[in-house]
View 1 (cartoon, one colour):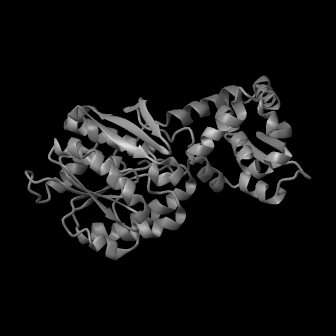
View 2 (spheres, rainbow, N blue to C red):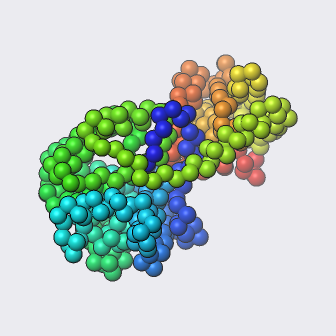
View 3 (cartoon, rainbow, N blue to C red):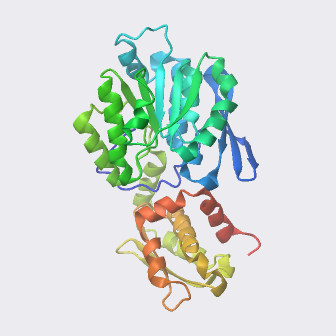
Length: 374
């Protein structure tokens, strides 16, 4: 939930993973469906979430959601040490009957794991919401976990809600204590519709609270928070240590003059097993500018995959290079691929970040670069 406006954009592809309570050994695939079992220790139960990765980002688990679930789990186990205690007590002491269940609305629920966990850990009445095309999977997950939720006397309802559409919000009614969300600040064109929905929900009920888990990816996100502060009091109540980023910055100091390290990186990609996909590849390091330039020529049969191949290279390089290095990926002049179009897409920061959120692409990264068959 923290925002530091002077931070650099982070390589979030490493950070977007399911949380530590996710039981990776219990990940079951059925066609395009993936079932993730997530243990909630405070109620000694397991939540089962169906993911549909090929359908888009709303159908997959992301780190902010599972982080918020962990906070809810820890609150249930020991409210005295939880960062959520002050937030929950602020609306519970505003006249609400402590014996009555909390009424929660979750925005941009995606798979629904946060709302389901809130109902299960707090014994709350939760309405999970998202766009119409997400509702079917959302309802599937709510129904699948109904028994777990009922053990705590909680309930989960499903409703379609488009940000910025007040009619959709009005259907929810006025009986709302808490609004939840996770990982909802990403596309800039959605900032104003989201704020419009929040203004309606929060200003209509002055004692309501909005609790959001947020993973910082880009500097542009500060625009949303600056706008939000015009209407609301915004506080950070919990911030996980950015371990991946801190570690990378430490490597920057150690490896800045390590020429052998940079040479090894280049050799690694020159010797890549992806010879079926690349006719030729050239790797150049500029020590003064901390920049790596990759020029590659897709083979004729793989020109249609030029974007994906370039993204594969970018992803793998960013994972092994110090954080401050800039990676410039280009197709070689005269290759069969559409040079101008590909180069533009491969070096557009936001376009690359959005593309790498596709789990199928990340799988293809490993298959292209490290397949033993190549």
